[in-house]
Length: 148
Image (tube, rainbow, N blue to C red):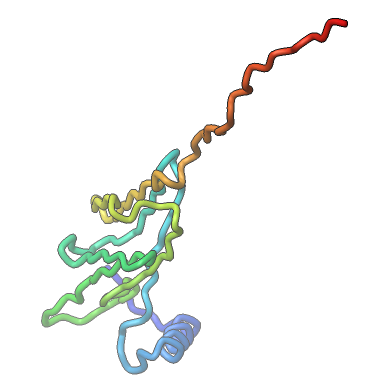
């Protein structure tokens, strides 16, 4: 059973969040979409924590080099009294600026266990490669000797 207590510091934190987020008078507050990102060889991997988000509410867009992730966790409706509300609800958005060295046409996405995983391959033009050096072969020369 949850016991509802008054915590002046938590109430002050909630008030501060509402003032700075522009959500005065609502129970919503800005939500963070925690993320990890790393490189594995010729690909970048990005994972976002989105527990409790329905897969159909996740929207991924790429425009120019900006990847936008939008997700929504809907509020529960019913005839009940909320005892604790610490999980953010509403629409979450996060944008990542991707460099020119990734292949935006081959991004893969999967959602499992509340984690959205994106795999972004490195573009072929950005992979290390050997460059042939062009040159001319030396022409054979003949040596003439002069006899006196």
